[in-house]
Length: 363
Image (tube, rainbow, N blue to C red; front, top):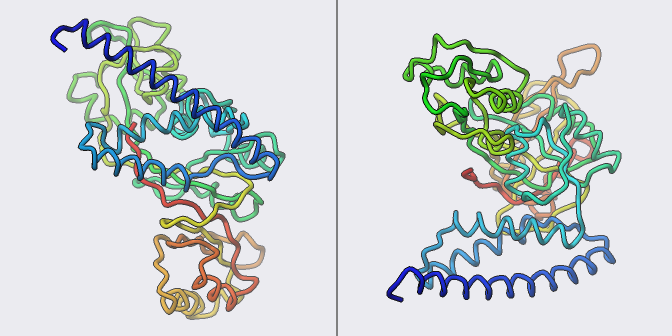
């Protein structure tokens, strides 16, 4: 291929072949959906999707291809999302509003084609799932800077829905505006917390004296900036995209390493994979007795089960300072070694979900 036109002709021919293969894939996917519907099986299988991406990544490495894991994941997560909608269209509830970081996390796993339901509170997401008004729900559970989301833990303790997947997403803020130059900006919108997260950026670019207007969400900030050519917003990438506000600067937050862990909730049990994590709630019968937690954890140690997190929460029972414990460990609830622990603590452990261990995604 010697000319640009030669390259374009070759790319067009490959695109036609890719489309033909994708349509062939979707025909099989449609049949998979029929089989799953007959057997009442779950459409979303994170362990299967992870295995596919790992296999394709290895194939690309063996072929010395240009696509790395991140590129393959970006392409195939969207293919998976389209496939799920062909199998059986599902509604996904998330902590809103549109353009929030939770919305961004949802789209990263369920794609742009899915039917999304924006809700005003974490409690509303749980309630919607319990009432079967949505198949999946996405809520934050912890942040690397601010710690756990207490409301999510408290609702998990009393809900029938389970954790079916987790994902870790870096929280990046963008400076978006329709203005051509910074000097034209007369006001900046964001959530009050957003201004604090981007304090160094505002100082470096001499924006500290520009009027800062707090609003209820970064999505609202993007909406307001979209209507005023002399306004800017500190918001998420997806909010800027959704409301068509050009991004002048990206990744402007002070703490570049901030991560939020999101969980995907539903009503089914995942099959075992080779890289699982399990969440449980522990209500010890003698929680106020000295050493009760130590003895419980010793049983995990004896079975060589690796814990990744332990968090205490007030039980909110009347009449004392009683605590429950949320524990994450590596493995599946059906693993024989965990079943041995479970037998010793009948009535004290509530299973919250077993799922493929999440990896950080870059968006």
